[in-house]
Image (spheres, one colour):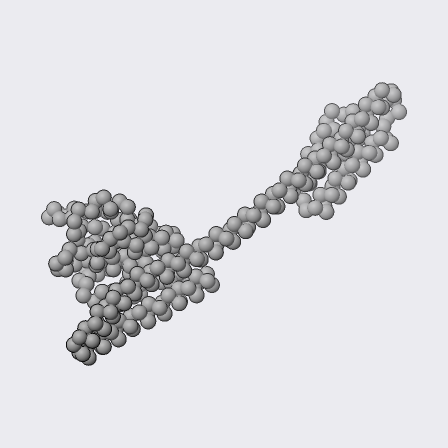
Amino acid sequence: MNLLITQFGAATNPFAIILLVPLVIGLTLLPLLPAAIILLLSVVLQLSQLATAPVSHGHAMAQHAAGMVWGFVMTSVLLAAVVAYFRWQLAQREGSLRQLREKQLRDEQLLAIGTAAAQLTHDTATPVQTLSLLIEEFLDTGDIRCIEEANEQISQMAQALSQWREIANDVREKKTTQYQSHDLVDALKHTLALARPEAQIIWKTDAPHISLTADRTLLPALSNIIVNACEAQPDDKTHTVTVHTYAHEGVWFMRVDNPLWKDSSVFVTELGTQFMRSDKGYGIGAALSNATIEKLNGTVSWQQVTGATGASHIQTTVSLPTDND
């Protein structure tokens, strides 16, 4: 382009300004060394126009042409300095963004481990309380059956600790697990049989054999939702909890229905968004489960539903993406 413009008036050609376009592109896109070569080559070719200026030019025109050349050279150097400054700023900003992404990843890992630890605390609170009661009863009565029941509670806590260690290792190593829907339901049944053996739960499974990819925080989160539903019961303890799992359009759903012990329309709208004070379940466990499911690209929703008989109940719906189209 320099040679072409040199043949048609050189610096006096009004289209000479177009030579800045490849210079700016080179300074912007190329690495440092090739960009410097482009700048040097552009300056050298511009200065060469001083030696090849047409003889027919008058003195004033020759001075004007020389001024255009030097002006172009100074503009090129100034452009190079400005682009270099902005590239340096972009590099600094990219470095900051990279550090921010690494910090965000660490925060997500800490959140996952913290959520799992909070779930562990939530899961082991009842066995610890039960152990205290059993020890008091054994000291009062000396009944050996208290020791047997205490061993069961200790086994339950040991299993929870083992699961938490697996969760922590998977989060640290960014490992995920492929769950089959029927195996996941079986694991939930086993967990609930240990955690709430007295609960009356009706299981309905309409989902085909589909797979879900998630880390090991999924099972504690789902089991916490069902445990909360079991705890949020009227005082007579005669009602049942229904757990219905099904799939629709590549999404796996788990719907949990449990009776309403009082008018809870106010607090139902706030479930999962904040830690709530509750003596009937639906306290911290709802927020922890909600955070875990959201981390796995799923959703949790709670709503108060009135049945055909006029009785109200709470319906919790969990949705998770599947590996099946």
